[in-house]
Amino acid sequence: MSSAIRTEHLSKIYPGSASRTPALADLTLDVPAGRVFGVIGRNGAGKTTFVRIAATQLELTSGRAEVLGYDVMTQARDVRVRIACVPQESRPLYFLNVEEVVYLYLKLRGLDHAEARRRTTEALDELSLTEYRRRPVQRLSGGLRRRTLCAMVLASDADVLFLDEPTTGLDPIARRQVWDAIRRATKEQRTILLTTHYLDEAEALSARLALFERGRLALSGTPEDLRARVRYPFRVTIQGAYSAEELTSYGRLTPIEGGALVFAREPEARELARRALERGQRVSMGPVTLEDIFLEVVGRAIDEETPPAEAEA
Amino acid sequence: MSERNRLRSIGTLVRINGIVPIRTQPFYLVSIIAQPLSFLFFIWIVSRGADLAYGLMGGMVLTMLSVGTGLQSDLTHYRHDMKFQDVVIASPVEAPIYIAGMALSELVYSLPALAVFVALFVYYGYATVSSVAILTGVLLLVWSFGSAFAFTLSTYFQDIRETWAFSPIFSLVLTVLPPVYYPISYLPAWAQIAARFSPTTYAAELVQGAVGLQPLTPTTAEIDWIVLVAFAAALFLIAAFKARWRDP
Ligand SMILES: Nc1ncnc2c1ncn2[C@@H]1O[C@H](COP(=O)(O)OP(=O)(O)O)[C@@H](O)[C@H]1O
Ligand SMILES: [Mg+2]
Image 1 (cartoon, rainbow over the protein chains, first blue to last red):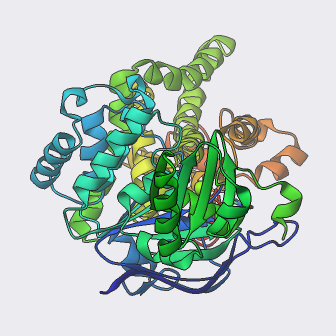
Image 2: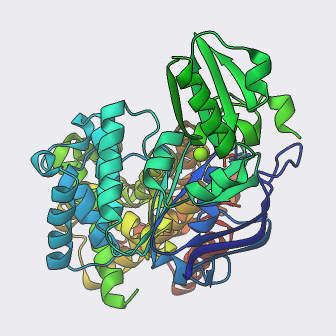
């Protein structure tokens, strides 16, 4: 499989950052072509820095980064004709209507009228935006604005799309709409680099994932790869009374409301579940979630802010 | 991008930033016409009609400069509040195409003001082949270096509000202090020297000379052109090498 984005020892130190703490440190990463690649990490982990370097919007400090084999620093022009990006917190120009946002973006990229029209109609339809097509962006909800921006890049002829936190700040229904849009877009053989701090989103959409923590790559691979990398790939939840001593012998015990959560390897997990069922307890068992993996690797939850002093590490 | 696609991009930018916003908010046109016309009115009243021609020539130069001021705040706004510049960078559209398209789109807003000035210009009998040629050349130069400078500045501003602080300073330094609205001979000697540092002084000297408001020797005219072109070239070079398209 060829790669869409590849970095080698990529580092970024923002000019004037007082502590000279790298926003990205020695990042070596391979994003295969033709799939959704999810970059996850807490606020400040370096996701946007990575996206902006790969999308040729930001200079790198050291190392290399390539998109479709072209160097982002020395061959930026070759990269730029092949990519499209929805930057973090970007907003469509408010005086345009939904259709104009998509159509004029395509014209701006150099497509002719007929082609731009055709792609616009198709994308609006795919993203269920047709009924809003004449509505000014100013009068759209946040979810529809994001969907419009996604429609804009999905309609383009770019091979690599960057979506930087496309669903942050949206309500659950709007998030699902954006997910659907991304899913439908992946039918084609294009690469989508998606960043998010919603783990369910990353898992639902991505064929492969990379977990960033403080500018470093903490883990990467398919969701299965990530599971295989943790010590205990299974989770067993038991409702009711339990003996801490007994459960600890199966794996790692975390007390929860009204019972216990045990992380264990597969045989122990099965054994534990069987025993608990025999005792007539309510049991559920399954592979660990991304959330669990994140906690184990990073040592804290994804929505916990890094205290500024600690971020210096 | 092919030449044809470049033209298409420029046309699209004119449509995005020049035509659609005016369609949705026609008052943009009124606001942009208000300043140069109110200067003209003021000069006309105070001089009891005598210096109307100065107001006219100055108004045209000011209108072309205001394209730069408008461009600079639009570019800053698009860059920071919409992240539109990032959207454009990650596309086949190159920086010079973006600037050209945006600078042209700002020109659309100035068309009504220019139309009024041109009508008066013709009505008062100033239009000759040479005056029209000189005027066109000067205004194009002012527009182009103003736009190049505006782009450079916009890539350094962190917030749209910074541009509000700078705009009046620029219009003071470029249009009120230099002899755009009156002959340079009105200025005291020290101010004449100071005015020589502003490119608009040379622009004004040329347009005032073109309609016979001021005597202009061929040598002076030549120097004026050279200085104006040099200013434009310098501002283009600064834009090419110092403006931040990709962030550092
Ligand atoms: N323009 C900037 N100047 C200085 N530091 C920055 C800048 N942008 C981001 N940073 C810092 O770089 C680190 C990574 O930020 P970012 O890439 O935005 O993370 P994420 O997108 O994962 O939230 C953070 O510590 C942030 O404070
Ligand atoms: Mg970010």
